[in-house]
Figure 1 (spheres, rainbow, N blue to C red):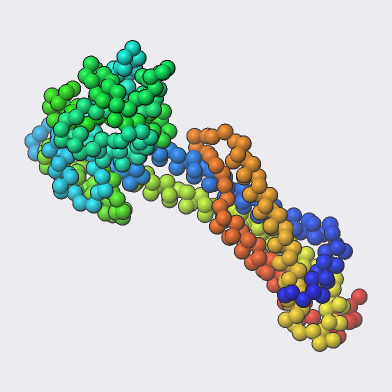
Figure 2 (cartoon, one colour):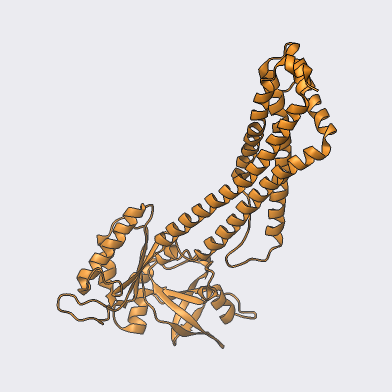
Length: 412
């Protein structure tokens, strides 16, 4: 493989046929270039869709109360289902396998003020675990804790946009200050940032659900129960949802198959569909890319056949002087590998370079961002190049190895 005379001979052959070598290599380089671009574009599309999943745990389940649509045990349709604290406690104690669990209360937009600054912001009472379920990023202070719930504390965690609206000028420090929510004083104990694509998520105010029920509602009604399924498998996560529906069905007397009585959003299911979709897209891209490369390989193989034909007499002389069939095979295959690997590497570098250029200069899009070809793709493409070169040279090399020295010396 590393004999200097072989490399000199390969170099000499390439020098004599520059245009032919260039056109042959171009087909391989183009195939790799297109494969990298397709994979990078697929990655950009995947990154864009992943962005849509931000702002909530990918293993999260949200169960909201609704209205019955099926008759059940003599009860008519159209009954409004109202969750209570008992529903939350029942699921918490009955359903196994969750990481975090929280109830929520929907109170809509409320007037929030600090001194002479006012704003209408969405009030979101919940339990401490909701910070994990929603993947809230606390940038100052803290989120809710169990003491806040138990002692009905009037504390608030405000979004960045709430802070920038209420705290201006020289008074920009929100921590420890008191804001009025519908006329009731709450102390700011935390400021959060939400990475959800929905900008309104930054305009929320989180308060203890127990406090909200006592101050704003006067009863223990809740609107939603959510939990994360931890490391549960697909089947285990589905079983947790089924158990939750069974608990609520029993407590509120509705048909467990009534999908309007309660609304279940299983983010696990969305993620599963998303992964299956992009697995199919990646497979399709590889099929198209490899097909393009195969076209290049066929071109290289045909050229090597011509090379063998042109060098028939030379091969005959080599064999008559004692060259083994394997040495002839190795020479032809080595030349094919050199051409395909070098040309393919150029296509690989150009493809990765173009993706980097596009990634740095393209404005962020909602469904397409950061197109890239990772290291594993580069490694696979490199291996593919070597295999392609070996395959392209194998059949011409075998033909060369079978050349009869006597007939070759007669060849004109």
